[in-house]
Image 1 (cartoon, rainbow, N blue to C red):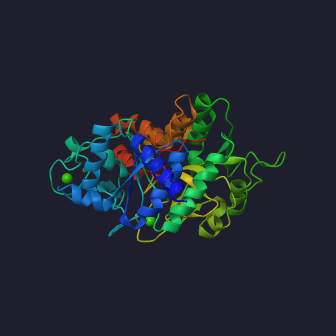
Image 2 (spheres, protein in one colour):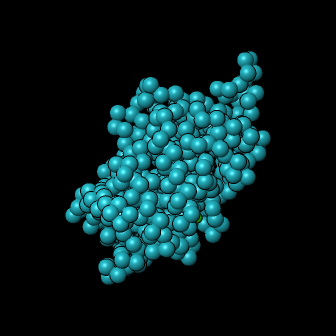
Image 3 (tube, helix red, strand yellow):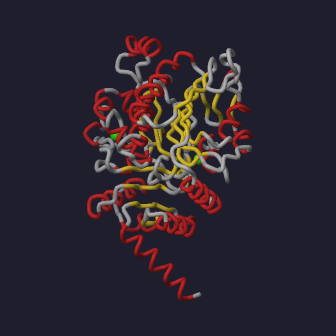
Length: 407
Ligand SMILES: [Ca+2]
Ligand SMILES: [Ca+2]
């Protein structure tokens, strides 16, 4: 037995030596993440695990978030690492891996508290004026840098070793399944139909001609009976059935949401009780624009996307979601909103989602984290010009292992 254990260790260290993926772990979850990294190494994606306790001791400057950023940049610049995993949840008080809050103006005033995981891959401090308020659109401009499309990040917002184990089992099931299942696009807001259809009928199929995209809107679905448009209601029950039937493994959800739910047709909601019933052995890759559904850093835990990620044996394995409003970002709202409803002009949030699928499913075959990094790199000019695009860049985070392919 000792021999095999030793061989196991040698394999792990050999994998770690070739690693280009840095997995940042809180000390409490270190053993669980080492086991996960070993599995991912055997699956062809070696990882190096580094503890937040080691990081806190090794870097002198600033708070833990800054130290993690400096550590990440050292691995990127000196050793060619290109992917970062934050292996823990965040809370308003800090949590296992505290997020970096950035400041934005929203429709109610200022929001100091938008968790911005792209900060951790940045070569710059995001605080040019040194007032310890980060990401201020004007005052910190010179120290804000956006993804370059090469270095990527994702957070797996777990709290316990059991969560890590359940997530690892889902990753295994995900990679074992048949690749390239159907992508379904759900929309319960009529004003957004045109842009979702533009994404799903033009942009994504152009990049992914062999794939299948289906639509699940209030007024029509791919599963309506003949001559009965909209008869297959966009209800929690029907949505759960479609998640569980095994044909669809990719989902884009457009419409209203809250920290604990997606709002569906006739003011019904898909919430925790529906997540708990999911039986999809092959977990989903998801994008959603729905407000607050990606609010992983909330006092209330889990948010609905965290519930999807943590649900053992079902739910999702990768999710791109807004931590806050997920609103449509436009340079000229007066002109652009009518174009959105009539012609399907994409706002910054919808553009981020569509480009994510294009990068992941098209010729680039980008891994999930890289696909979001490419998508965000494509919007960097917009984010430099406009505070609202800057907000979109900050609040859309990848939840899940960024080194996974989208398949
Ligand atoms: Ca500042
Ligand atoms: Ca959380």
